[in-house]
Image (cartoon, rainbow, N blue to C red):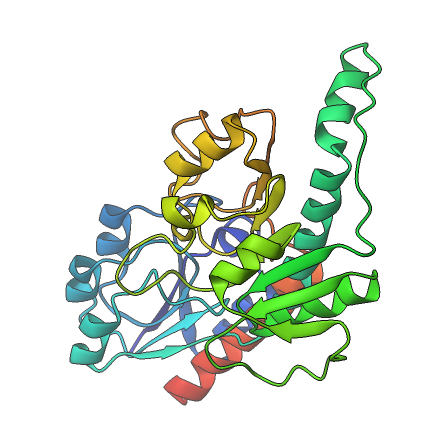
Length: 309
């Protein structure tokens, strides 16, 4: 009997990973979606029948896809987010969901720090100006002594907190669980979201979207931000009301928006990404050699543990 595993993360379909290919050695057949592309609903409906395991990325998974997954026993994410999965439909079918806890935390945290410096020192704008023959010299800001707000203190958020404290910043954080991060109380404190937005020079988002589908950084909350705030989003596009965000960039309430995530990737509209105070990257937070290796290894191990070949 052929035991099939579907593999759909773009980082693994573009360049098949040894940890995935090793599953063939224990009797599995590997089914890849279109190399390097975000699979569509129709493609997944066509590929998933007969697969007992699925190593999944951030592609949207609809109830229609799960209905077609007649043999599916487990979905193993190569990350930690599950908001792209229809959890109720999966529970009804008895499909287990496993995550790669902490695998890409370092990679995403380092990108968040890179975006922070890019915004504070206007690095992309300056680079583009020099390459165009100009000599732009935007006056920047240093991170030491600044207040950095961190919303979400899971593996990524806590890594960002450690890094910015090491750089001399003060951290105000929000997490409903208020975990003990073993950080010095002189540099770290918990607060609510509104206070963080009103007091921080930089805010970095590391939380899942609200369950009701609303934007965590809503129009009302954007009005509360400290003028000139730098907002960094390496989590989910839905956390932010983009229309209100653009207005805040235009009127100067928001100093910069640096994002690695979009609701549709690549974004069909360039209205947001082309704004001069927006820094955009192409969902590369966890796309380092080290993070891909860790996440793939954990995701493959989770598949094996769940399927017990």
